Image (tube, rainbow, N blue to C red; front, top):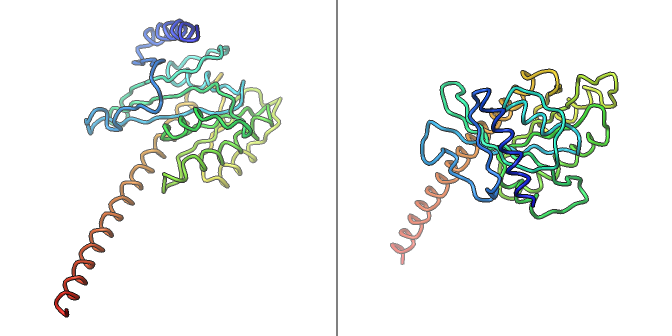
Length: 251
């Protein structure tokens, strides 16, 4: 029953996208743990990024995703979880975004094995709160720590995170100040944007492209760290052999 619902909504959104000449594929049956090569089947000119949107309910995660994909704002969504693939040319290179639009319960008290698998799947994260909902801001604070714990064991570099305060068009109902959002991002070493998915496409675009830049930087740092480790291992092995040879000569 759930799969049928997802397929129906996916076809509906594809029709919107086709009308706007945006290439997009909705993959409702792909498990996040099984992903393609980061260089898109060995092509070095293509770059693939797995992005997870997390946040409390009703903060505008789906609106943010669809605004990025189609430039349109759609205000109401059902409880449907999907992974979307959107490819675009950026700075002369094909970039493919795999975007997980989550609907899972995401507060700190719920230890869901599937959520942890998705956290491992993602290269970067957009954590969304509503500036009109202080409780959603607290959820983002918890999620930063949860991501760090999930990624920390296997990842020598801090995971790329962008914090987004959404619904700026409703600032007359604001309960979270812009300064609080910036201070949280500064303390957590994350990027920060305060936007309105309802009013402005450009702000949404900046948030996604800002995360893409962080993902690129993180991969470069990981590659550099792996290269240094390889050099250290090689040098250690060489000196280890020399010590053994010297010992054998003395014997």
